[in-house]
Image (cartoon, helix red, strand yellow):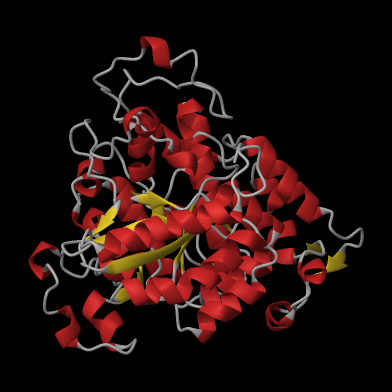
Amino acid sequence: MRPSSRAVIYGALAVASAAVSNALSEEEQVKITNSTEECTVYWYAGWTDVKDQFPPIWKTADIVEGDETAHALFNEINATLPTYIKPKGTTSGDFSAVRPTYDHSDPDCWWTYSTCKKPKYEGLGEDYAELPEPETWGLAFDDGPNCTHNKFYDFMAQEKLKATMFYIGSNVADWPLQAIRGYNDGHQLCVHTWSHQYMTSHTNSQAFAELYYTTEVIRVITGVTPTCWRPPFGDIDDRIRMIAAGLGLRTVMWEFDTNDWKIGSSSNVSEADVRKNYENVFARAANGTFKEHGTIVLTHEIHSQSMDLFMEQYPKIKANFKNIAPLYATWNETEIYVESNGTKGETFADWVNSHGGSIADTATTNTHTHPNPTLTGTAGPLATVDNPAVTSVLQAAAVTAGQDGAGSGASAVFPRALVGAVTAAGLGALLAF
């Protein structure tokens, strides 16, 4: 769906009710089942008290005037970026002026051009698009939090499902209680940019701001700092990967697309088309495609149709895949946020054992390809680097230890310095991780 179409959807939701009310409690918001009530615009102090520190919602982000912390971090990252990779096309994805003259060897590893997922800029790690666990469906959803998601999240809770949620920063600002529910339900929160535009079209500072302020709004609202992200439309090149890596964000792509996000758009994709796309994945599972690895299938919580279709297809997913797990478990990630007091991840074996399986079920797993249970943020690879930015992060973490817990909705639980700051000297450690 083009950004303009998304803006219509989100704008319609924002005015679904003329009334603007004070926010309910988190517990009250979770219980709402009427979609009109769910999408009644509300004031939430945890956002309204800090919104002037952020870019305007649903607009191309750039560094907010006077935000010296962001400027300083951007300057550190900007010094590491490849100067030969320039912005491409428009924010709505018009690359017609770029493609005819772009080098066919794809030196930028531009996914939109060649679906490149193995960066060509030295030191950058490969994008995550497959899973090391055979016969495993990596559960993830883009474009949340959607204001009508209570039924969907209730379903996942009933089925004991946890997912990796790629949240849009402007959606978190619009629907902070829905974002808090995502965290409180135990889902992994990751970044899906501020305004959901084509990232390679942005200048360096805009691309930085799209990621930085989304990371920040998630932290401000939920108390935790994400460590992964997914580019809208998959539009990424090595310049954007470097900016994301500088912010401590791992790039996550996908292997198959249900196209559920296109329902109701100008592309005329129907629910029947989306069901067929699900069936194509199931057919691959049946023919042994996933005997040696698992898969990431692109699905969304963008609207009720996409969420309803996943719930409809879930029995077939269970029938065709041995395991359904959040992405962090398939990669054995146990520390999924920067903050040490945030929700922890699980290794894959622990996930299987706690969800009706046993260690015997993983006997055919390619365990030799797994990293050890990973640590990110202040306890991760950057913490071992003699790096002034890392030192400041560690000091900030020590100062804030014992403050308000994650998920409280507090507006200032952790300082901005905790957003995985890196300098040119220390960036290599993260890129090689």
